[in-house]
Image (cartoon, rainbow, N blue to C red; front, top):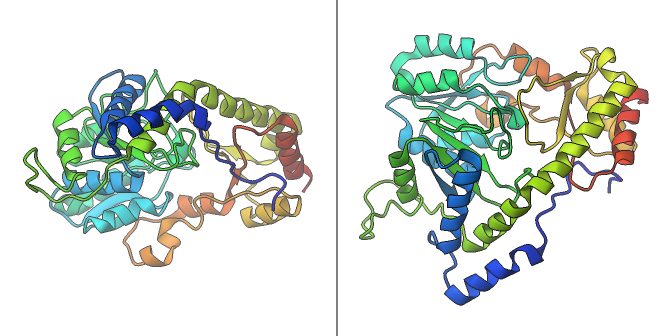
Length: 369
């Protein structure tokens, strides 16, 4: 057991969704795009996207990626994506019959290098079936270039698993005509246990995805396209509705912990010692606190040192996907930056109930070892 664990997920208390559960008992509708799920989708569309476009819930974000890639991919064999992402991203492409093709990342924001992407798109041409960027750790990535790709007929599915609550100019992804997939996993800032959301400004795309997530059925229960069971249960939707009501408070608590880290790091002088933060824009939803250790250090040594002091930490995403057994044969660009970041990345504890003294201890250990 760790004195300070890496994550301590905290869903809303049962009293917050008890009335919704009673509604489920009364209606005896438990899934299949029920009343609560419909309400949840409507409120998410309003809160996150100001009612522009459309959205459909899914039972988890990996299912969401599979559905979005399967529907929108064009003829071709490759899904271009960063290696610096969770394994769900390339796995979703493989489930859709595609081969992951890994692109290196930028050293500042840790997102896919769009100059390298452009070069590979020009080289591969029609062999590219889809592009799958990842919004690293919930960052507000610039999607204008991906909108241009979408308009050129190159499908784009953005893996924004940790980006619920991230905003730049008031939103994340609003108006994007490709698809954006979000996660509601318990470890995320907007956690309901398990679930996800697919958004697009293209309403017919969401209509088709909704049909795909219900076995490809049309209104006559005739399976017209490839599909699976990707529906969110009414119970998960109930917790989601309660979470929406409490989300500003939950988000505020995480932002407060993030602010403590920033203050403690500055006071300890760690940025002057080579500790580096991700370049971000706007407000970023915080799932944990990520830094690069000094270039002369090894992140695994940092993790072991913190563990010796009762502090649990992680090294997401190291090993990166191209270094994992299943994906080692997949084609890629040079992975120089990915491997540099992977050797230095340290993810520190950040959860709603953390107090300042716990943050101080983490930073003190980083400073003194």
